Image 1: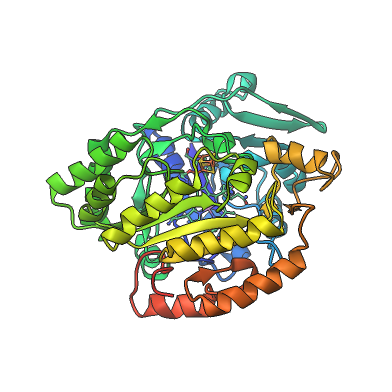
Image 2: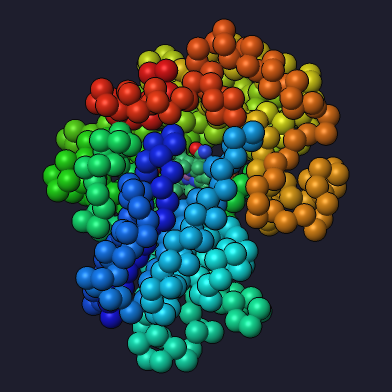
Length: 454
Ligand code: B12
Ligand code: SF4
């Protein structure tokens, strides 16, 4: 069959990110013998024109839409991406009547809402490799067994049905031949790679377990390094971001990847997300020797009370120790901090600000308010704390702000504080993350996440 995948994401803030998920799905579909094309709308000046061109020369029999982002999670400067995506889908539906299937991380958080909003019948929630190929197989046979297709969601006659989840074998590899690697490297300063799927932790606000599952599935370190080697030799990609929810957990897996990188003599720079828990001087050094240029810690708060409210399983001592491990070897480290979560009050804010001032990391990325997602503990907390009513629709972005604080006053204080502390980045106030400055730094050829340059 002829399959067209359309990646609709065109967000370029904080930088454009290559549609890695679509490249995984494209590889799996191609391996089943289908003819696949991937239309990436990230840099398209005219969505309709790009779609028109893609349809004209190809005439696909099934179209898959990859939906990465629902909204930008930014309190005060929120962007809801779905109205534009609806225009894209409507244009496709006007031009062709072939089945259109939605998928992607954004879709997986809100499968029913997205299908209703976009007026689509089918979607795949969670990983797409096995599920989408099973869907195509079934379509080729007349579409009679859709109830057996894992991860499939279906909206028929107003009724939403969702089949059970099944996880894909992590031996799958993306096909980067479908990606515009050079443009992403130039404009985004990095390529992306994955060394595991799933997160076993239970932070109260987090959607990641709903997207990738709670069970850790580790890729074989040798296979990860082999993939990176191909990225360098086949596409000239010399800076990668590990998109794993947490790179340094479990620690032996992270260490083995670094050791294998060193043994293979890879010349690559990289960055990753990490947890402060279990960070050691040995691992930090090993990561640095293997090419790590920056670690982004999901530290979240600087007090026991707020760490508890966010469901974190580490302490402020763990955060301090992780920052020390990096500082001692001059490894740039940024810490995401969330202000306004459950348990936050004026005293905890003061303590958190003072804590991150003392540990003095390379950057503090301060997020204000917490986007409330379905099927999270935070949703239950938001209802019981009177922040929202139980029947409040969560699809259009809504944020948890602790009832014990006045967020407008807090933002003013933070703005004052950040103006005297150049290592503070506050997206909701556009402090330290101005997109023109970031673009300029990219034009100067700078790679990596850039928070160490600001
Ligand atoms: C790594 C990451 C980042 C990194 C990216 C680094 C890089 N160079 O790639 C950084 C920090 C830059 C980042 C930024 C942002 N991110 Co982010 N990010 C992630 C993360 C952790 C992993 C994404 C990833 O690459 N996954 C690996 C790939 C292989 O998986 P996948 O894309 O999900 O694809 C699979 C399935 O979804 C499915 N699939 C995908 N496409 C299709 C298509 C079809 C047809 C089918 C059937 C299936 C299918 O199959 C794929 C293979 O199994 C996710 C959370 C998560 N665990 O998913 C958030 C996530 C994607 N990010 C999110 C957001 C919002 C953002 C930002 C807007 C935040 C901000 N304001 O800065 C920006 C946007 C950046 C941009 N330009 O688009 C949200 C999106 C959902 C939402 N809430 O709207 C997520 C889900 C996190 C969350 N809070 O819920 N992000
Ligand atoms: S915030 Fe990080 S550690 Fe916590 S559940 Fe989400 S991905 Fe896992």
